[in-house]
Length: 324
Image (cartoon, rainbow, N blue to C red; front, top):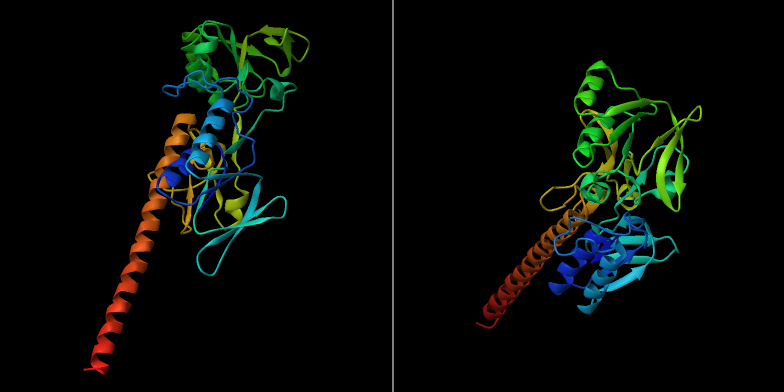
């Protein structure tokens, strides 16, 4: 059994499977989506824990039950005639597996504003449930590069009444401006050209023409792009993910209850299939998918045992006839 991806979803799946007495290998590229963040929030019992500490603890738990963690990047996979798989890694090595749990996550593609990447997950943010409490009541600016920015401004306004919408590459219409005004959200015109950082803290943004806007957090809308190389190599396509009629990214479809895909033997968990899921939800998906995988393996083992039993019974009957 191979798990591709060693984030919260992959490790939770691996832990469930090794505790079910399965032989498990986790292939981990070591590049989790939330690596830039110093802390994670909303995970019951682990609120404020660093993502790196969570993953280190998870790896130790998986290895404590006999699971193996292999550093490396799975780049593709091939289906074998017997229904199994060969996973190909970036270093040229291959691994054979009877079942695959793919939990490779996604890449956040940020708007093209200089400096965003360096502050991402620190004070350039997108999820209020992950970071809203930490910037409560502080000046928050929302970068508008599409109509969903109005929804973002509404959400963040709940944590801070000092929220500003920056009409960067998209400008709200009259109805939207009325809604924003009713909430006390001001609109500032002008393309954002850069960030102002002092003492390693975001203090504002600069606009074309030289004007500045104060903020302690800049909210953006990244495009969520699934890390889908292994899956597309197996013929599983990515599909557009939309919100309020607007495409916000691409993911790979799976059954929401079990993580099963259209290709037998392949399951998904975490952001590769559910881009909006947070750490706790991704881990839950990993555990659910692992339970479904174990049930599938038990069904296959039972079927083989029954076939062997029937073959043995038939052999005994034939022998009795020959010697009767």
